[in-house]
Image 1 (cartoon, rainbow, N blue to C red):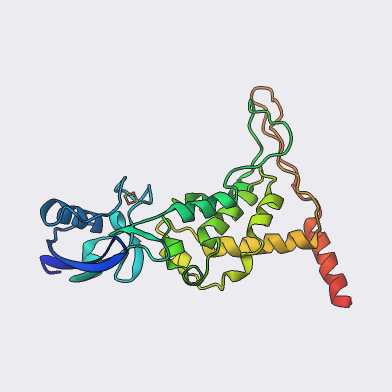
Image 2: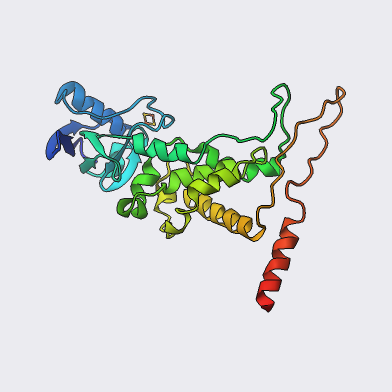
Length: 274
Ligand code: FES
């Protein structure tokens, strides 16, 4: 690794694109975000980029480096070669230089109701049942930090305006939660978007948190198909943990959709005979 790298930034101002080039001295362990901060402090105060936590948690430092969407604070300069091309995240409206507008992205997330939906009167004084297996069925999707890298890498998002991998994965995350009963409401929001994913998997490849949005979309499709096979049969959400004596073990929860697997097999067999 040479002691200096050349960083070429594709910048955006008032509807115009232009390029700026900088030479940055590299130190061992230097991240791309540190290189940008060095440029801002020593070469060009006007360079705009977004960052906050510097530890891969807030998801605000996403940009495109050598054609790949990355988090600047988690990317080593040494891994990008001696000439680094930077541009804002693709599939997002640019605001200024490397800063993009997240408003449409967050609106899509809001459309799928990213919160638990419960029916009836709530009792907030006690906990809800959730077995380890039920938690495992969606836990990986809770690691999403909404950084937008998946949306930026998605080939479908570059061609059409759709909910995108993050919002669809979030729809699955909450619908798969055994405490939730809002799938019907979410289905209304996602039903016209499920067919657009063509399994490129680029969303899952770029996720800095190891989340697999592509899997989330496939599971959501399966859930929607199952829902259409079973009609409007309601899933019963998990109930409250009943009051227990001290030291008494938590009772094992009942299955939420009783006999669903058997019924699907019966319907498929009947369809095959037709
Ligand atoms: Fe927070 Fe990079 S600055 S994820």
